[in-house]
Length: 500
Ligand code: NAD
Image 1 (cartoon, rainbow, N blue to C red):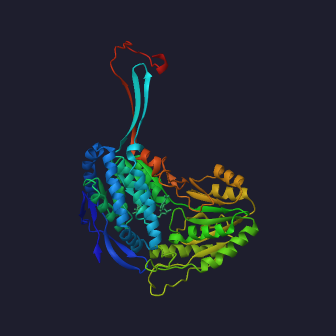
Image 2: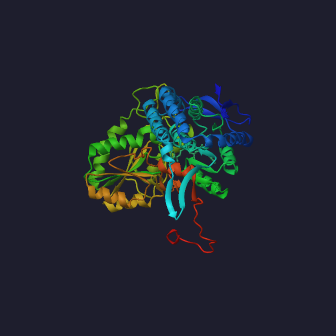
Image 3: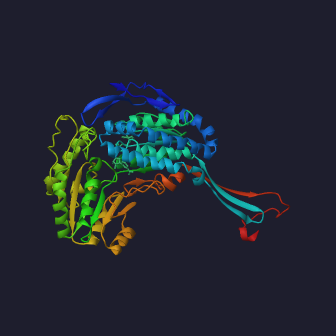
């Protein structure tokens, strides 16, 4: 069995804390690697390297920094098969799904390649007589990223390429459940020409994160993960005077209007609820059917499709959905399904007893479909993060909208309809950060920013895109007067530009 390492100062560094976590192949249940869990001093070594590398990197012209990202992009494309295999063996998702997620991360790298344009400031010539005012954006220093298990390539790629393009150095703390992809990405950045120390990867758990939060050399933290932990990190980070963006959990509703194209709805729900075994923060976990007939039709069409879902390991090219991440996760999801049945929801398709031939120790679960779910049930209120879809029946559009708006989470949502008025009304009034109109998983492209509302995000700025540039830079406004024979004498009161 291999033992993983940290990546500090451009080198593989063995863990010295004596603490290790297990990396497991979810398809077999076998432990495939030991991952070191960093101590305070190991994290501090990573921060020290990033801190030392920062001034020189920040001074590199943006166009030269972009060259590194161009190379990095090419290397990711060349290494795509290997990266996808790393993602799938440690996360469990199918190879096409792994490749799709890497491709979405790659879009952010491509966006970051445009950093000379993105960092262009603003200038006002002659703001007052002989006075010019300009604003520019400068890097922050050592930025840190803490990432979840469900997108071991994509979420790190939302963070460090943008931060590094802006001139920062970076310490990444990936999920300890599937950490190998981050190590590979860091190697590729080095190969692309990034100076040693600009990107560091520390393996670890809460101890590592607490050290990143407390260290005064780290001015900014990006976190993606569950709501309970994100809320704490946001509060602790703010108490330490840091800039924090914490993207968190979700319960994404898809509203089905009676006039929707039902073929489109069925395909959308299948992919969005069961793709990646429901382990996506933008997965659809609630279908809100408007009208009894709509609900009956949704269930009639979905039930056989969910029963026929091809569940399998990533080595099975036919598989549509892989296992979930851990045994604990499997048990937790099954517990929610039990609770839903107990609370009186109708379990139309029960995936709890699925046994995968030849992979009996894998963490497999079949797709589960509930009908007649009501808002007080835990399968409705909580993020399950598994292949479980809840259908809620409502009488009209206003009730559907009210459900989405009253939910604690507000990450993504969607409406399926042929009615432009209804769609426009939904877009205007819905309380969520990302909205789809006949699009089930509205993850914005890289040149828009990604983020939810309510308990799905703590912080002001969304991630990647234009908000990414803002998050990883601070603004400076310069007011400059050059001697030109203008003398206005001592000024004892504020003057506006118009008075000069
Ligand atoms: P998690 O919150 O358990 O872990 C996220 C990160 O925090 C990991 O790196 C983990 O090591 C670290 N961590 C765990 N416990 C900690 C603690 N007590 N203190 C400090 N750090 C700690 O999340 P997960 O299970 O890896 O990922 C799934 C969650 O992530 C889901 O809730 C999902 O919705 C969310 N997610 C959100 C988005 C988004 O953009 N909103 C994207 C992907 C995933």
